[in-house]
Length: 285
Image (cartoon, helix red, strand yellow):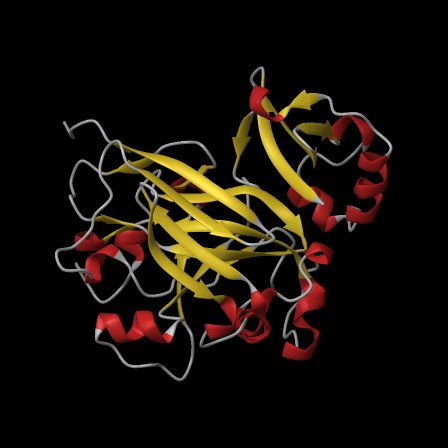
């Protein structure tokens, strides 16, 4: 099942995507106000049954999509998680995963513009697989980790490279407003038989710039869940962004930066295609 968060007529909603229509779930599930709430209540199977018996309430093209989880408690991103990306950066593989945080306010949804900051001309793409937690927990064993996954989505961890290089910490370059993209929807975990066997491709203006399979991750999804849940409890709706492969714009000769008017796509088989135009931020005042 594909689950979406959306806005229509100024009101936020969530629902199940059936063909090109959305079955609104909030009116049919009293007490559940969001996808995060649906996951927390462990009522995804009920939502699927409701959607199967309903007709769509909205056309997909008649709503404004939001990030699948607009209000996660936390977004944990993984850096340097593919060997070809580690190699192109000139770094070495670390024993433990490289983690940093994003904020929900730095994200846009499918179809919305990713914003090139006015203070930088080094706006880079990073196609990634996002893992959304369905069942929370602390000290989750790797062998049990996939049972805690609610679903998967595409992610573009847009990076402002010069600001990322200001210090050894990644956060400044990863949290500019409107620089990350998340969507277009959440594909429930039961639809993805093996998240380590997915093909991920990033395209800039139709040109393939990244191509990988998720089995090439250095730290796989179960191990990431186990590691992060040791640090702090994972909650339903939390997002783990699992790292980008080689081919980023910063490491090309010459560098390939996203510019005003570009279109960037992140496509993962079985999950979907996240597509965003790029727009320049108005000049800083």
